[in-house]
Length: 273
Image 1 (cartoon, rainbow, N blue to C red):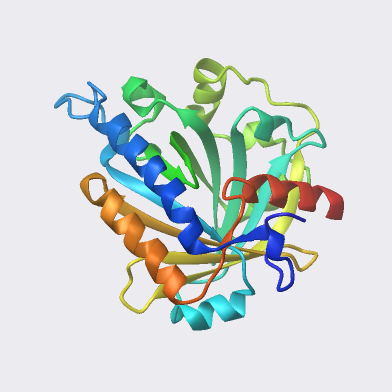
Image 2 (image 1 turned 45 degrees about the horizontal axis):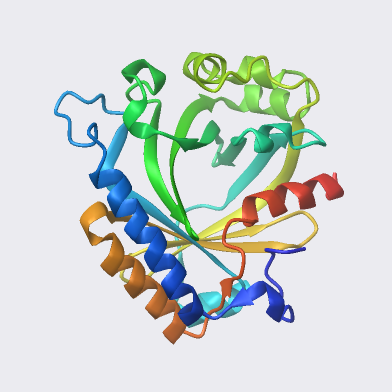
């Protein structure tokens, strides 16, 4: 079960110091990618992307309780219940798509996430103001743009979606359907999609609020831990190096495969359905 946190799987870990060189190369690529885009600083560019911000994502492989103590984390916000949607062949994931339902405190948000997008080339209508964003992600040694489009659902619609009384396609917003149909050309959706979960998510934050840490627990008890932090583009090399150094000083191991967690979660959820 590569990518899940265990206490005795050294082959799944990588010493933080050993990851610094790979991370440095990825950061250098990101700076060149964003700074070199002729659209990045255009004054009339639609508000679909913030080229000045980068989301750093770092997967940790150690028991969550140890990570919480080592990094001196505080729980932040209410627990989340998360459901992912796909079929046995992971058809959405193979197209770089994720459909995720997050519920908390009676509120639900259905999000379409699309990987490997060129934020600078999107049209304003592709990501309408107030409904989504396109931003750069740095995850392991991969830098790419990612689109997110969200649709809020009420409690009744959420229940109908999860128990199969409402097809997933009918729960999507106009903007989400348009992006699937006209931008990535994956429409209609595959016919056998179903809800996978629930995944219980607790969010933590450092005492100085520099970054968030999400701890996800799957129905079978598997746990995944990820740091997320928004970084201004000019500060990426310094801030990323400082974050990895902080994790190393705390004695927390990085996951050897920084790109595998999303796929591992889905495959594990399929086995548990």
